[in-house]
Length: 321
Figure 1 (cartoon, rainbow, N blue to C red):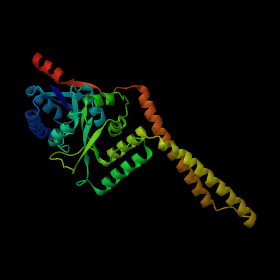
Figure 2: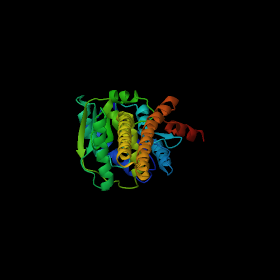
Figure 3: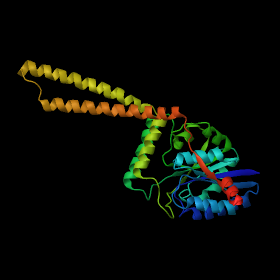
Figure 4: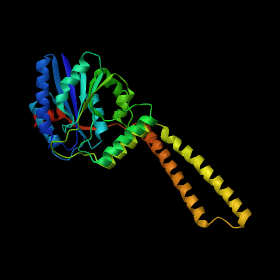
């Protein structure tokens, strides 16, 4: 018998969660008919939701023994949710997917077929189009992937998703990376293992709204750059050289003006140069500060997440009443 753990991070998903549960049940039944040796568990991670997500998970766990859940003490973010799911999963294979049905459950049988024979350690999806996204968001997303692949030794495939079907060996390798500031797209690539990419068109959410804002994605991209590249640390070096050249040219200009016209360079030019240099210095300090802040947070050794409740705690509490 082979157990497949389906890890589903959830944040305010009360509208779409029943739809996801219905769809994933159909797929599990189909896979068990084709492969009778397969068993399943669904591990939902409630990331401090403010709606009825936790209530729905409680009800599901009481009526379906395959449903497990972990409820965080607060919102720790999707990265913490994925880590918790991988850590608490029991399966020989582990699937990570969103509850919003933008990761179609219908892909699971095909993904399993790629992984089960050992030819691949992971099967994942790759979006070949960004229909439904704004042009600005699509432009910055593509620019991010191009930049990451230029400045990092870890290749991140453009359009690759967190929707992954992995072997236990790959999951254990990912769990061996304990950093507090996590960027899973980079981690999935960094650990290696043979991966099969399945291309598909973008799928819209059937209900609810995404919790990812443009600013949230921008901050997430900065996390990824800092986590998997030290190239930005070269920027202060380059800026220092530029400042030196500007300063040298300004000194030469002052000397030439004094020798030829016995006049000084206009004050506005001096102020402009000083403003430029100070801006560059602040930018350089900001880059160094980002790396220092990540080092500071890692040195605290804080837990990646804190659990408030799971299905076992809830069941024992219910029975006690």
